[in-house]
Image (cartoon, rainbow, N blue to C red; front, side, top):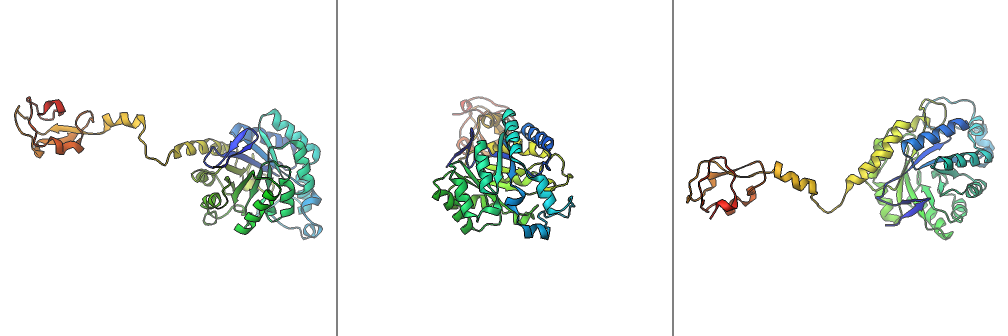
Length: 351
């Protein structure tokens, strides 16, 4: 099983999931809010906070601004035009350095998704542990090749992508000499219908491409990302907010601090509970046998020298003497002493 190090954390299928609190643009252009979110994600147990690195000119063309496109899937109203939102939510270079320094000080990993080569250069200068390619760019092969050329671990989301597109994205990384690639199963709907989530794709991607596979989640709540742990997901990426009612693109489908805490804590419990494929009985269960299982007891008073018949025996707790599955070995033997009804039978009582 391939393992990849993200900073000091080893990531791989069926290891403790690496939890990414996806702040994205949920900071709403407010640096104080961004820092509060970082501290809250750290307190909840997240390994990493991730932002998005773009400028108004690197992501969207003029015609799209003029069209005033809507990108969220909810009916929630947002302030201003698309251009006004993009301008407000974009992080400056100075803000990138400030947030990275704040994360380092508070011992939580800083990451961001670049949306142009210039922003990838910026993140490389910042010394990020890995690069994240958003689902929208899985067919932007020249960009993937460029980012992979930094020789840092690559995380690629697969929302909207066919198997062929995923294969080509991986090959772009390999062609750049970078084999440290993690795929994220992702459904690029906010939120998706349960029938469209297809968590079994995690297993399919693991087997098809022989790489670690995680889950980029856009569902409401905690149940679906936690369910992914049973399939060995190596990463859980979940949008994060302090308040789901705040204006912005992703607050509505984001985990609040309490939900993020549940994901961080319960994912580890679920992984531990998966245990082994091989059937085992723990020491604690072995000891429980003495209390919960049954032993052979007499149904009547029996005299020394009598031959035991099936009707002379039944089974009751505790399981400290002859077990009921050995009844066949007892029938036909004789007692070497008198025993009373309901008395536990032992091998030393028999000839």
